[in-house]
Length: 194
Image (cartoon, rainbow, N blue to C red; front, side, top):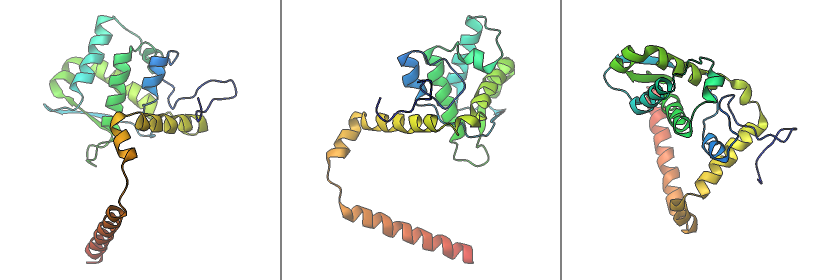
């Protein structure tokens, strides 16, 4: 447990108020959850294209097949099986890491799927927003430490990274990257000055 942080009561701290992380399997998955970013996401259902169809459909099926009526995000998230937690983390990453400024913090959902299941999808959005806006977890030093340590652990335990760790690094490639960055900066400055 070297490097990990625990509170004064000896509890492992994660960066979310959601989920019950009482088993090792849940903890392993929850170590990958992005830290709250303080931003609420919205739904865009005006398209037949989406980026989360599978995850949303799995959540709808989970709610309907278990006849779940709970609406409190914290209580509901503690009922999630491991597969739904994995899907939730995937949706969080997709909604928070969108490169397009117009759709950043937007969850694009198929309009037919949303029309038929808007209540359940809105509930899912509430759970995402509960996580994202729980910024008090960002200020928990141990939660941040644990997030960083778990990501480092994931990187060093990935077999494809062993090859790169044992290969010598050429300083030439670093110089080329620095030169390319200088050229890009000069180009950007020239554009801004005109």
